[in-house]
Image: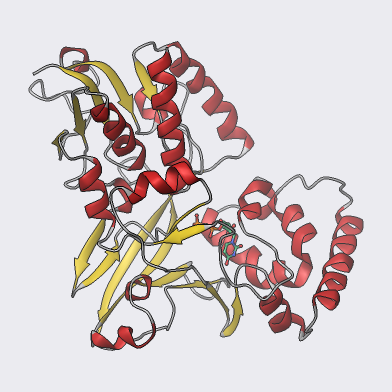
Length: 382
Ligand code: UDP
């Protein structure tokens, strides 16, 4: 059968685009190299617990259209992300808020905290001599000062990105709010939660009525299945959500990515760390964070209904060919390289590039969906 669209990748961009196209009466085939749909939001059920197999995914948005869109497929629970940072056994609340400032400096009022931070900012600017922060270190120092930078940011960021904070773009740290209220919510968004029946069900519903081929790599040369050479025999248009450098045969060189190695363990205890995510912000711990998955969907004493728990240690690793890419590294070198690939992509008239890997952008889930919805609308007008 010949399709209107071939979509490479069944993650959020691909699934959203597929849903929109299907609603418009188009025929679609989605291929994915993995043995399951959903990309990195996929969950595996282990001992009755939904394990976030590719890292923690907490849905959050203030965009009404996106929230309505996802609520067609699932209800969300009332999970709010309250992350704990563990620095050599000292615990701090994240993101940076009055609780963190109290724990760090034993101050109690917003006025005291504001003064501390104002002084710290002035000190950082004088020492490093900058007006506008030129990198992550300068941005962090000017947002929260030296004490917090040292204990909660510097070593964590170096572990996470494998690079010095001075070699990373400042926007990465601006993802985290800084607040002078006692509010531990990691996000500022209006809506937040985890799909009640898990992400897999959500994606399954998005892809209802769409043909899906799993274990199908776009770069394999099997003539029976759509691939990078023969796809025009299968479909009129291509939606590509994989790595953009791979798409063009890495002709300008490889873009850098960060990847994550996960170590999941089942523990014979009902409650291991008392929180969904604990960040280990010193170099002493080789991992960046530990997830305890049941806390994403069980609250209060419900946690004790299951005598076991599943935890995952996350290790951040530099990407090499053959690994799963996770985070684009948006430093100057990579952004220049990406611009060259983007110029090639812009010349393609029957191919749409979208999502974290194809746009080389550090997208969260909701902006990925928002972008797929916009891309579809724009595509329909043209
Ligand atoms: N970050 C940090 N300390 C923390 C948590 C985050 O310094 O305890 C920095 C780090 O550089 C990280 C960035 O903030 O890459 C963004 O963190 P976020 O939690 O948004 O990362 P993600 O969940 O996407 O891995």
